[in-house]
Every structure is written in C-alpha cells, then in structure tokens.
Length: 158
Figure 1 (cartoon, one colour):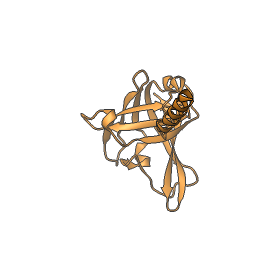
Figure 2 (cartoon, rainbow, N blue to C red):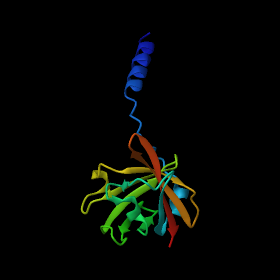
Figure 3 (cartoon, helix red, strand yellow):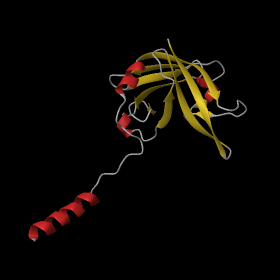
C-alpha cells in the first residue's frame, strides 16, 4: 500500500514539474542552415498584395532600405553580420546570431556591441521559403492597420 501511495505522489509531482515549452522550437534544421553558409545580398523586398504601404523592418529602417544589404551567415556557430548600404537610407551594420528550427522558422537576434546573444532579449522569427543553394526568401508578417501583410526578402548568393 505504501508503494502505491508513493508512486501516485511521485507521478503527481512529476507532472506538476513539467518544464514549460518554448514558443519557438529550438530543434535545429542543420541541413537548411548549411545552405545559408556564406555571403548573400537582398535583391528585392516585396509586400505581398501591394507596395502602397511603408514598413519599418526589424525596428531599423524602411523595408526597401534592405534592398542591396549584405548578409553573412556562418553555419557552424550560427553567427553572422548584416550591413545596410543603400543610397538615401541610413547606414547600419550589426552582428547577428541565428538558427533555423525544424518548423521552418528563421530565428534571429541583432547583437549590440559587447552584449552576448544570451543577454539580448528581443529577436525576430521569420518563415524561410524557397531555399536553394543560390537563393532563399525570408517572410515576415507586418501589421497594416487592422490587417497583416507579408514582407518577402529575396536573398541571392554572392
């Protein structure tokens, strides 16, 4: 009888202590990550449905300022950097940390100088699509009034 009570108590305790699940799956898609290794350029930024509205991407600049931006992805340690360099747009550069999870989501953080990734609270989750060895797309959701739209960043290998 004591064994049964002990088993029931331990079962209840084990269920009560179940760790929280994260919102973003952190199981990596290493094959997809290896395709990103190297230098890339954003060849276009398109809004699905219309180019009438203006979107600020990643709280940095207008989405169209990301056209021509240069990105480097290092797949063996999930780091990299990006540089905005478009005329008539503010110059910007940052180190990044990133990964692709098994759900097909590209998870990225912009890193401030001297601050480690684990101490950077905010980040971005985008959908990765149409991935080949020479191109891929990152798709972000943007709020437009009471609706939402997709912002598609087209990356091409340099």
